[in-house]
Amino acid sequence: MSFETILVEQRGAVTLITLNRPQALNALNSQVLTDLIQAFAAFDADPSQRCAVLTGSGEKAFAAGADIKEMQPQSFGDMYGSNFFAGYDRITATRKPWIAAVAGFALGGGCELAMMADLIIAGDNAKFGQPEIKLGVSPGMGGSQRLTRAIGKAKSMEMCLTGRMMGAAEAETSGLVARVVPAAELLDAALKLANEIAAMPPLAAIAVKEQVNAAYEMTLQQGVLFERRVFHSLFGSEDQTEGMAAFVEKRPGNWTGK
Ligand code: CAA
Image 1 (spheres, rainbow, N blue to C red):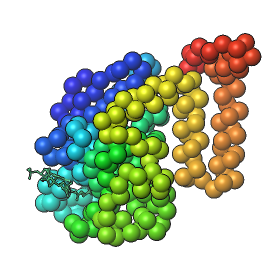
Image 2 (image 1 turned 90 degrees about the vertical axis):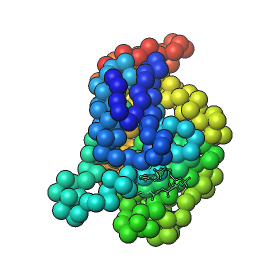
Image 3 (image 1 turned 120 degrees about the vertical axis):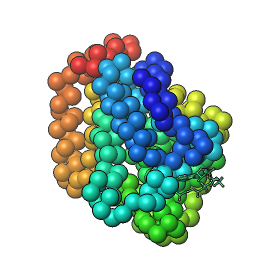
Image 4 (image 1 turned 135 degrees about the vertical axis):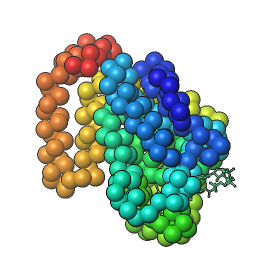
């Protein structure tokens, strides 16, 4: 499959998606969204693919935001009428796990896209920020919500109100990213982690993703009940039978995803 604004390749069971508008620091225009929707849908539908990595081209930027030049002439009617950015909900609907590998700038929509991932790995040159206020607007792709859930109100409010960028080390201690690695090793580290996840029983991986995401949507009581029911349901899978037999027989599991 070939795209105008992204590169997609399958590396074994891992799909690598690379934002590819380096001349605009990978700014996210409508074509990028169209391409991402198609690439993530194809990844989700392909049984040979178990985990994805989304990254930026070059070390300078993961993505420097939504495309300001595309948004500049838009009116309220244009934005509201087209439900601008709503297409990103189709990316967050991806059922299989995926990782954002962030080097350089992840600003505005770039930070928001990274936060749509199941987890973020950052290069040590990563810079996260929500600078929309400096353009006379606000976050619009989930930043005010996901950043606040990730790092708490005080830091999120400070970043969204001032546009201050957060470096990789602070992003790690604040809980925004899972791990920081030297920028030159970022892709290898992300692919290694993706391969580790890809080797897990696929139904259990989807189930775990649903459970953890439920923590953002439900009360504790509802979430714990949801978790328990999902756990129960995995006892209907071949991989549960295989996984527990493999443990008892002291051998690696052989997963069917059924
Ligand atoms: N949209 C469109 N083009 C962008 C862009 C963006 N978000 N960010 C960078 N570019 C373009 C620049 O216009 C420039 O193109 P030209 O060479 O044609 O002029 C090219 O990318 C390189 O950028 P700079 O010359 O500015 O590079 P720099 O190293 O001097 O600065 C930067 C880097 C600090 C990231 C700066 O580019 C910048 O501030 N970018 C905008 C960041 C921003 O405000 N992002 C939020 C966008 S709004 C949003 O995302 C809404 C939302 O909630 C979803």
